[in-house]
Length: 173
Image (cartoon, rainbow, N blue to C red):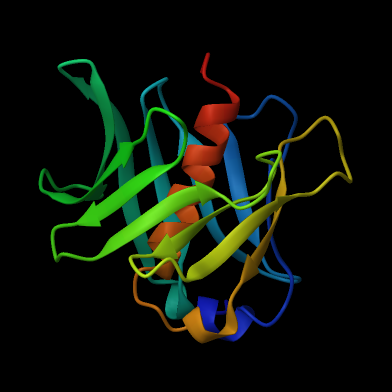
């Protein structure tokens, strides 16, 4: 199994294995790199697979406080927040890690078909673009900037970005 840094030069894409599944997979040309499963309407878990079959797992949970929604991100099995995503009223939002790192989730196209994370300096890390090969499944092509291949937070950002994209597309879930 490849690590993200070695698979990054190939085509990456998110796909829904079967129509109506609440499960999505991140693939390179030959390997499964990660997956997200929506377990409830407000929660999902993401797994990123790395070399040696070591997996990093996170949970994402949408929560409300005083009519302000946010998403908590935790390492699976812990009760300590690793980061919090706070959406903005007009779309997009900010992800803040407890370490102090900040990333901006935003639309990168006029019609809102492309989305991605940028760092605090507004340098775009990656973009999720529509993939229209199978119109009955939710899928996307992932384009990552070459200078960000070794970014420590990249696997989590790829999972969270897809979680946000799918969750916003299927608000009824």
